[in-house]
Every structure is written in structure tokens, then in C-alpha cells.
Image 1 (tube, rainbow, N blue to C red):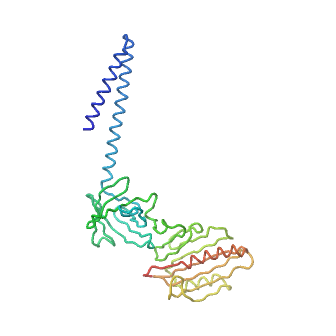
Image 2 (cartoon, helix red, strand yellow):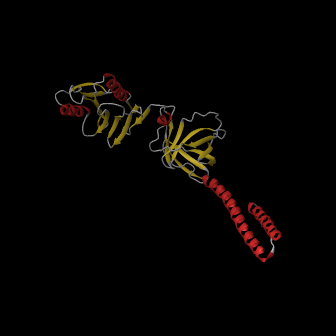
Length: 327
């Protein structure tokens, strides 16, 4: 229908152009010039109309392609009710691929569930908690510019919106950090987590070791090195450090941070009175099939206020330590 209308318009435009050429034509040379101008005008009009039709068809095709599975692609989507006037936007679906991912509740310490899913025929079958769990079917009603809308079977009156989170990496995304106005959480695969200020600390992981480095103004290096060691028990890891630190090192047994009844094996090396002002403190515990050690290295500058600021921030890292309930 659209193309027939365009052809009629095209014919009317061409007729008008030719009529104008006949009226203004005068003599053979002028007529030839008119014919040339007419041909050029026809070609230009044809190109313009063709571009218009192709552009419209292209937009329609793009819209149709969005309704083709997979509807959810690798990425992060914030989920909320379509009826909400000011949705909190704190609940997320994180798709590591278009076949599996996890949910995260940013208002509840990032708690969520892993899921598997299949996408086809205008439906997404979710298996929350794993592929062996009962499926929950999500019916797609629209997909526009990446925003997915629909409802779960059994809750047809509650339309949900899944809005893509721009530039979010599903492999590193954490809801609590995305929503944070200052304090971040680092959660390690070995079952422990700490809170930190990203403006003051950089965190890098290298195999079984995690470096938490203070980036503010300070004397020398100030950092916490976390090591998971499968070859030593907590006590053996502590005793090895005491021996390597020399005769000034001291040790004691006390509660491990972040626990109420786990023995921590502590080692302390006081600040050097001369030279760099370096001091060290480590605490180890038996952990899984080996040991876990938090080793703090600091440097005093001689400025008591500045040194206290750095020391407090380093201590806050240790004080914020938490473990998964299974550990």
C-alpha cells in the first residue's frame, strides 16, 4: 500500500516537472537543456523517495529484529514495575550470557539467585537457583531500544520493565557498588568480603593473592595483602612470618576479624624508629584446605595526624571483613 502511494506521488512530481520544462522550453538548444534538467530532477526525486522508503522499511525491520530471540543479551538490566511512578531501580538481572546469569538486590546487600534461561517464541523460561528448579515463564510484550517489557505467567496484571544499564560489565557488576554513594564492597571468590572507599584504595587480584593498596597521600607503601595458601595452616603461616621478620616480631593468638569464635594467629612488627618507618601486622586463620592471611604493611611519615589517617583507613578494611555463612 505504502509503495503504491509513493509511485503515485512520484508520477505526479514527474508530470509537474515535465510540464514546467515544456512551458519554459524555447528552441532546440533550450529544449535540450530543459530535458537534461528534467532528467536530473527526476533522478534526484527518485533517489530521495527511494531513500525515504528504505529508511522507513529499515526502521520497521530493526524493530522486528528486536523481537527476535534472544530478547535479553549479555549485559545488566534493572528491573521494576511498569506501573510505578518513581521506581527505586535497585533490583537487577545480570546476564553473563543470554543463557544464564544472576539476580542482585542492591537494597539488600546484593542478595540474589543464579538462574539459567532459554529464550524463544516470545517467551523466556527462567530456572532460578539452577537448571533443576521449577521454571518460571516470562512472556515478552515488547522490545524497544533494548528495553524489554512483559509479565510472568500467573501475574499477567503486573507488567515488568527490564531496562539496560549502560556500560555495565556483567562479569564485574555489583549492585551495591553501582548504587553506592561512597563505600564499595569487594567480594572474593574464596568466600570473604570487605568494604572500601574506591577514592582511597585500588584492589587487584592475582591468583590466590589480592592487593588492597592505599592511594591517598602517605609515606611509602600502605597496603593490605590477602593470601589464600593451601600449603600452610593458619599457625604455620603466622610462624613463618614471625621468623622472616626477625627478633623484633611478636605473636599472639586471638579472635580472627569478622568472626566470633575462629582463632586468629597474629604477628606484629613495630615501626622502625629510624629509616623508613615501616611496620607490619598479619593475621592468619585455618581456612578451607589451607589458610587465609591478611597482611598489613604501613609506613609512618612522622606527621602524627597524617599517619593516623592512613592507619585508621587501613584498620577499617580489616574491621569490615565478613565471611560467607558457610565459611
